[in-house]
Image 1 (spheres, rainbow, N blue to C red):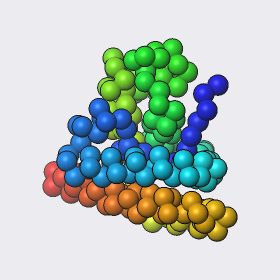
Image 2: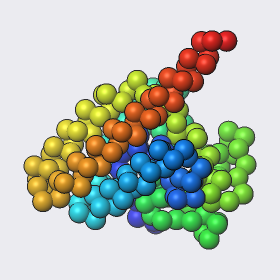
Image 3: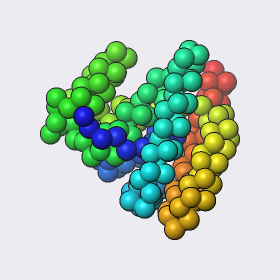
Amino acid sequence: MTKLYGLIPLTLALLATSSVVSSLPTVESGLVDALAESIRQSDDASHEGVQLLYNVFLQITEYQCSRGEKDCDAWHAVNMIEALELSKTNCDEEKTNEMCVKARQFLEADGKLVDSDKELKAALVSAAEGISSEDYQYLNAIRDDVIQLICHRQPAECKHIREFARLENRLEDVIREKQLGKREDCNDN
């Protein structure tokens, strides 16, 4: 079974490989690149801490989905992106990989057919953007409390994980603006 690494799903709603990042606007792709590096450093410094964050947000996914929330699929997409990216799985090279198969099935159920790793991850990124930015303040409070615990227990590793949270907040601002723009477009019609 593939070892899963974990980070905060909100960040990974736009985090993907450089091939997917290249399709993002310049400001976002630069921010995503910085965030990706921060995530790698955080995982290297405190894999246990990153895994703790991942497990907390898996529980949030379970909570959202068990109540039938409309963003359940977005949470699943985020968890799939996370698993694929952090395990460095390339679905072109590993077509029968369990995570690749599940991701394709997930997208096909929504009528999205993908041929390549790049298309698969881009489609997951698109699906993941459905997490409501209205929830960010509550999710960030949970994230920040977990980070405080990690920093208390592993003070030497704290620098990277705090930088990760700072960059994640900046990316969330970009996502929030995109979602607000979409809502305003809907209100104009």
